[in-house]
Image (cartoon, rainbow, N blue to C red; front, side, top):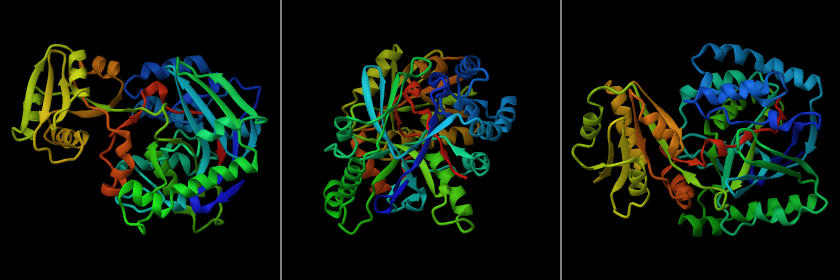
Length: 438
């Protein structure tokens, strides 16, 4: 392994399943997906059975608050120990270049480890690695409990770089001659295809690091984001897995004064992707209101003090088109239940992003007992299905412009929680690679 402290990454020792393991059963989607669709995880459970799989090494959030939570949690560490003892892994020394195919598109990525000493998830941080959304501290304890005793980490974290000239990751694809192909398989439940290549060449590794160094040069950062040249640079912005990386940071901060400086827990394995990659599409994260009360829609309108223009819409497709093709200066979103669809314009919004305006309103609906709870939903079909069920309502949000992300984080700090998603649920990162953190 090699450390490159100037750009905050490590070229680590990575564990991948040996060739005796069925990769299709081994890799499962991120634990925070399909939280309102337990049937998805039931299919996974039946498909995998007792076969070696990352399913046995993580806790699906769909199980939180159910009898499965404790049962599944208790098996995680023993499964990790068992997999290591049975030598289910082989070691890849160095970064991994990956290609993920889905829906006729391709996303390129780089598996490496980030230095948690250069990461700060607090709002307004000036660190090299920053969060993109506010961290909910109450969500960390159950994650910390799992990680602090775990032998392995299995990441679903996607970290973004802002590389419009495509100098870091994209050139790797043209340098794969004599590079070992370490996996090549279909992901379960129609989630696409994944290939991975070992970056063993020191020359190729050096080119990656050189390109990252250029991205954080004072001149590049100043011109790109309209900041002073002495402003602290932002190289990595967490795209998916904010709370997972925050958990790793919390565990490291807890133990770092008791362990060697370069202890494995100082680093966190992630996939680095370029925000300008054609395979990166920013999708909105819609809101599912559960346990709605009789006057929920009236309460929603009242939260905006009559600064709304509300139009009744005939159907969901028309609503989606209107929200997606808004050319007014107003913020626009959709609301619906089992009986009605509404297109809503917010005049004189108090927040710069639509998601921020509506999230404040939803928080008030919960506080005032107009709804019981809110869930965060990926995908148009899913929010339509769940939002039109009795007792529920849906909030349909527009997508955020991805070229505004880094500037927004630098200028305004963390975005409202669940502002955007990089693709729909089945396109999320799958657990595959592991790394020892003990």
